[in-house]
Amino acid sequence: MSQFLSNSTILDRPVGRSQRSAEQNVSLSAFSYLFSEMVQYHQNRVDSVSALEHRLEAAGYGVGLKVLELLAYRARDYTRQTKLMNMLQFVSTTAWKALFGKAADSLEKSIDHADEFMIVDYAPITSTSVSVPADLGGLSVDAYISGIIAGMLQGAGFPARVTAHTVEEGDRKKAVFLVKFSASVMSRDATIIG
Amino acid sequence: MSSSTSTTATTSKTINAQANALWQKQPKANAEFFALTYGALVAELVRDLEQTTEIQAELDRMGHSIGIRFIEEVLAKAPELKVSQQFMETVDVVKVAMKLFLGVTVEIVTSADDQYIVKMNENPLMVFVELPEDRQDLQYSQLLAGMLRGMLEMLQFDCDVSISSSTTTGNKEIHELKVVLKQVLQGGAGEEYQEE
Image 1: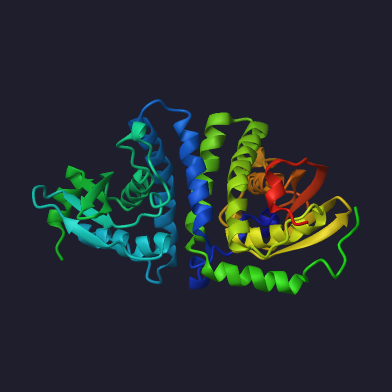
Image 2 (image 1 turned 90 degrees about the horizontal axis):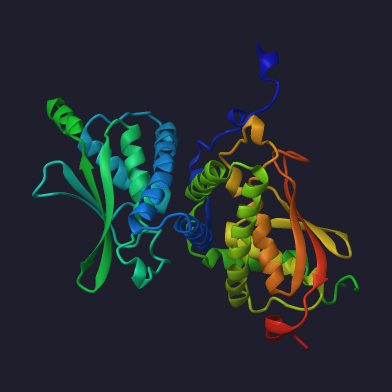
């Protein structure tokens, strides 16, 4: 058997199970500049704000799927979330900490819609160093993070539509990621005991 | 061009210590998230452009755009860095820049009067990456090469920066960038940075 595996591939390299490699950092500048180039690249290829946001979401989606796998692999107990609230907790605390260095500022449930939840972040890494010119009003580059959340939820079996909104609160702004689960998720969750 | 002497060049240890101190103060972002974001970008380029040469050219162009801006941050945070007309003294700037950008300590080896090799023991961009069989010739980290090229250009040195070794070419364990000076650019914006 081993003669077929003579070439060392990426699967042979440790993916970094230790916390140390998970916590390695680059500069915030590096991320900001990279993200800025990414946004500009997409911007040159589309002609509407919503198309740009879609592209950023799509980019984030793939990342979300991978992040889910990586975090699930790293968690000692390999637990797969089956309850909706537990999954949302996972996203807003564990995943947020892994990606952004701290848990999300809050996780809220919508009063009006049973299938809607909000993850709030006061300073999302994607928009803190970005200023949107007036002619692109309404653009939220946080769409990239929406995509990541959507990818993670989809990968875990909780398909949802995720959108990023900037909300003013007093004299500061916060990013609100609105998560709207599909009907199948809601009905399934109602049947799970626990 | 004279090679730098021990009286003018800061020692390697001093520069590394300086770079480390500056790194401590840098606001940080998660390296894996950075790597995954870069991966998403490269994947997009592969989908849109298909030709390896075009993908690399685009990565290089993006890196260049980052480099010409990032150098400002480096020089602002490390005002004690000597910016001069001596090409070999850019070595110190590159060391500090790589540390400030990626948190990576690089070793620089001079291979001739007008060239040096930047060696990285680790490359945060490639931590999850393996190139498929039909893309083995893609220099995945070309963005870094473009970035160095852009930074050096702002320091008035027109250089060729290429990836001479990575996990797919050359010595597979080390990531290396080769910097070759083409010409010194004349005057212009660089003058206020230069010391008499």
